[in-house]
Structure formats: C-alpha cells, structure tokens
Length: 103
Image (cartoon, rainbow, N blue to C red):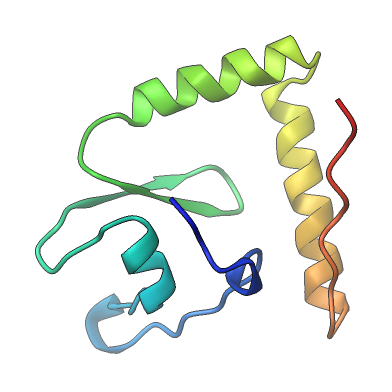
C-alpha cells in the first residue's frame, strides 16, 4: 500500500452531524476502503486508532507487542512517545516528523 506522506502524521478530519467523519481519499484508496466497509475504532487512552475491518485487531496488537518487545520497548513507552509527539503537534504550527531511528 502506498500513502501520500503529506497526510502522515496529523491529518485532521472534522466531525459532522451524528459523529460522522470523512476519511481523506488518499487513505480510502491506500487501504481500499469502500462505502459500507466496516472499520474498528480502538480507544488507547488519549487517542483513537482506526483499523480496517471488523477482525484482526487482536492480531495487530500481538504483532505490535512482539515488535515492541524485540526492540526492548513496552506499550507504555510507545504511548509515552505518542503523547510527546502529540504535544509537539499541538504546540508547533508546522511540525516535522521525527526521523526514523537507525536499526
């Protein structure tokens, strides 16, 4: 899947009547999301994660946990990093993503 990097991270969408949001076309195209598809919303504390499909969230969580463990990370350290990044985006009018860590 290819996603326009200008959309990542921090693409904003506005909540409309009855809580509806419109996903930008680039996301719909990249993830092959069509009208009527089911998405799963997961509350991870101070953020929501939107996953394509009704199932698979447990598999995704397991894969994420395994990848984090292999890096010596914990879920809490990842959430701390997300919170820090969100604070930067909330205060910086022109945020730049952190560079990818060297592996």
